[in-house]
Amino acid sequence: AVLLACCQAVVGAVQEFSSDDSSQCVHFHRPGKVLIYKKDTAVFPIGISVPSDLVAESIPRKVRVHAAFVGSSRGGEVSEYKFGPMEEDRYQDFYRRHRFAHTKRKGGWDAVRHAEILAMGTVPNFAGLDKAPHLAVPFVPKALLLKTEELLPYSKRLEAAYNATVEQLLDHTRRCLTAESMAARVLREMGLWPTQRPLR
Image 1 (cartoon, rainbow, N blue to C red):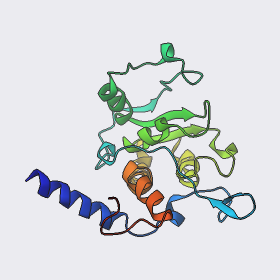
Image 2 (image 1 turned 60 degrees about the vertical axis):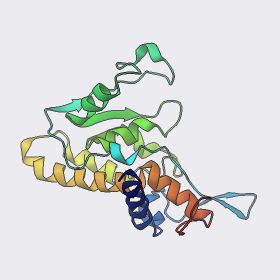
Image 3 (image 1 turned 180 degrees about the vertical axis):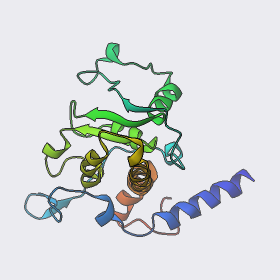
Image 4 (image 1 turned 45 degrees about the vertical axis):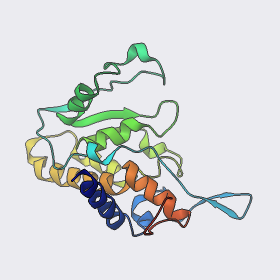
């Protein structure tokens, strides 16, 4: 039974990621621009991702509006973290219960925190995203996140628009920001996906 479940999961993954969705997942500020190395070698983007089972299946029940930034002021300052290494469930539930969560650039533009917030069915309030270099955070849906500023300040009359936005963000997260989708994209660029036997 376990073997059958594993095989079904693999077949599902093949079907889910078998087509090239780069135009929908890669969000450069200047569409069509690709990083080129030594004049003739295209460098394809890869980003930080989360396991697919972390992504909310539907919009979670929200009890608060804004989640404060819970990381460190500078990358790696663990003494400033609000949650410890064994409190992952509490950390995720914290984001899940809020409508919006503050995030920002620290050591670099990309961070697992952005993907975690999106996976929890919460809208990232990404400080300075409009100033990000055009090749930065390519898998974050920049245009959609910048548009979410229209949902602030939040009020109940914006509930339908908020829910529609979260559904769009969750769909994007499932397709573009999971570890499985990122791995499939890398294998596809290498010419190894889709195939009956991607790895031997």
